[in-house]
Length: 500
Image 1 (cartoon, helix red, strand yellow):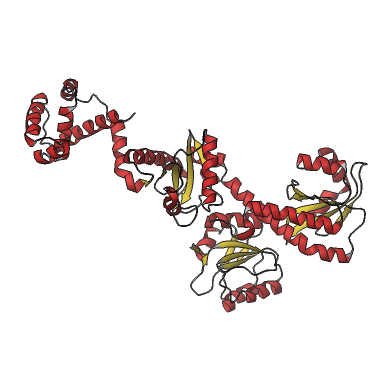
Image 2 (cartoon, one colour; image 1 turned 60 degrees about the vertical axis):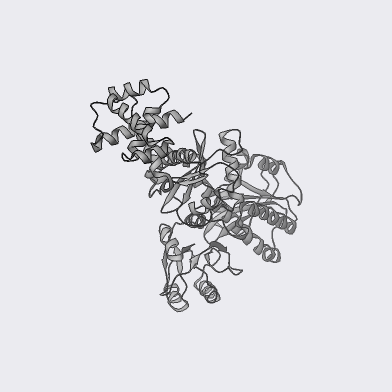
């Protein structure tokens, strides 16, 4: 886990924060608070439903005995907040003007790079969204649709009152049909939706579009969606009061889903692939951590690259990484992991690597900026090759760096570099001479040690070396640079002969 100061410092584009003069807590998760409920210890609280100074102070006082990591409010910053930080010793942040809650929550999850806690799992959130939609429909005795802030259908009731063709077409197309949109725009409905937080009536605009009650869904000044309910009657005060807690929870649910969508879009397969290939502008991809490793994931149970991607995604989620950052390039699945701890980190992936039942996991050195990613992707693939040669299921660059370097050298060394060496190799059908010379060089000229490596008698090594020296009259085996060059030539030849 990261400290509050470290996490909020990563989010400086979204907010301003002040921390009291005490040791900061560690952040365990992001909790969305709409004005009710109590967050868990370690939470970075997004107080989306708390707007006035009085409400802010009440919340901060209620958290005085709860070791939350910090509380974030919508702006503006006031003197009352500054006083509360000093008196109550709670770290407080305030969103910058123009910053959205969804953007902040997505960025905070990215900074933590751990699984959201509790109900913030995407499947749970979607299920809860439909439950709330049915509860609102039952309360209004109306068939309804819930749209997000982009006017996309995100939920619809399974119960309720009468239906019409417009509702059916909207559900099937996931958005309101264009012919109805143009008619509603003429009534001013969309303009009112963006400027009001009060329910209003949209009259029937056609026989197949019945009258609706439109309920804007907002959190503070931020619009997160709307409810469109087919209903003849307006809402009385009692119904509005009963509706308020449901619409508030619906708004929070939509906000969480939007934050999760922002996070998944930020790390889509295509964007990560472009970043690893070097075709994504450096500033367009935010690394999940200050130090980020590229990991090559070995073949799993899939029958195609896309299957491999799906298999790895499912496996990583099963091991608690809620949002795996994955892509596929030339048949290999790559992941971006942090150099910290917890799900989504190299430490975590290394600990489960041998238990996945899938292929090997091979990590590059840490990248410090998006510009480093293409080179680190190549490096991860090189580590994977070296790990296979060494029989390792899990490896980092630090584990096999010497093998990676030698493999690069071997690829660069041509087979024909010296006439005398070429002649020696030409008559050495069984490889006895080349093998003996290589073992003798690696043993620093020690005949006994070379004999042990070759599993022969030392005199056999001496006899072969006498023959070798006759075949290499111009090569000085006492000269360090010539010894090194000859060693590289022989090891490169051996490595090439062993590869399929």
